[in-house]
Length: 365
Image (cartoon, rainbow, N blue to C red; front, side):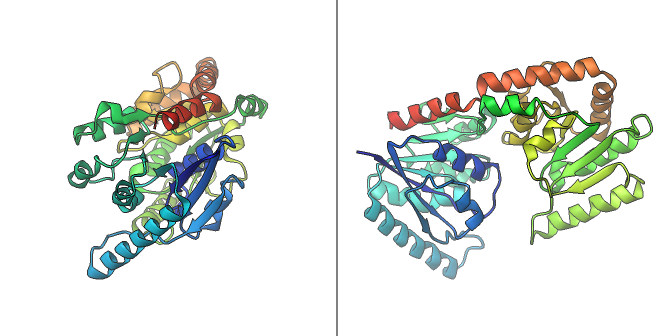
């Protein structure tokens, strides 16, 4: 008989956490029957590639801002979640976000269903988290950096398991090797001030005379409806104009295949000025064969070995400029970092190994 898994994910925005959730659930064997509770986002539904038994569409409300109305909606949703769980009778529940952890945890306990949390960041407030740690049987955490956050609130060592949220088939890595390199340096990410696109632009301004044959591209866009993100996007466009970099720096969100695009770059830059939970795009760039320069804050320091699989920097335009200058001037070093990064990805992030660790957790529960 198939084991039934009920997965829950709000799926409103398609970031790295949502993509990894779809990837890892879609790769489970046919011995599992997977149901998904999520919002009405067709783009998100398509990522599961027909691997689900059923999608249960349900708006998953937040308690912010708190009011009597939002609380009523929250409780109404919990009643519907309880009904779905009783209908499906799953062997296991997997929750992917803080919002879904809050919604489903007390119901799972009441109905005596084992629960797994996926932990992707530090957005779960500590004061609330410490009271909710009694609910999940296991917490799958995206990095040791985030594990420290959960440990500080009282999570038990036996309760936590670090699984870096990235996997790739060796075949794809070999195919990406055949992509021809161009004199491009790239950066990938949504426009949020702490992601550091302005730092990248200022570093390019200091390099453009020496490396005028290179082009610099930022793949990303503002979060729609987020005024801070939209204002930052506009300020970066204005900065490019003010520094007269219009012919060298391009911003685009229209990339047909991001991995293939990155495979054509010489360098991938990642210069967040706040700690990253992990930095999935760094792993993608390494798999694509880029020489990687990344901020050392947070998770990136765990996945990049200084001088072996990439360069770690303090996220300032001055440090970024120095690192970019070093790699663009030294083809031998650039190629060595690229080659060693690819080998590191093959060894530690091939899907077979990732799925083996994930299924081991499921079997233990």
